[in-house]
Amino acid sequence: MTMTSYADLAAKLLRDAGTFFRNVGAQNPAIADQMNDNAAVYEQVADLVEANPLGQLDVDASPGDESG
Image: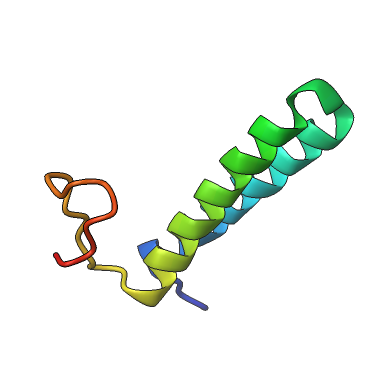
């Protein structure tokens, strides 16, 4: 039996959501930009989860502050 981690599953689900948003945008040009932005966010989070499954997000940091 092949086992996968929760992080692997989460990344796959996030990428699938990104694909969904891109497909919705392709079918609805009026909202394509917003759907592509949504897709990009989901894909970025998938990258983060894959690269560092236990990483933490500093929600108290100021925008643009990457010192934390």
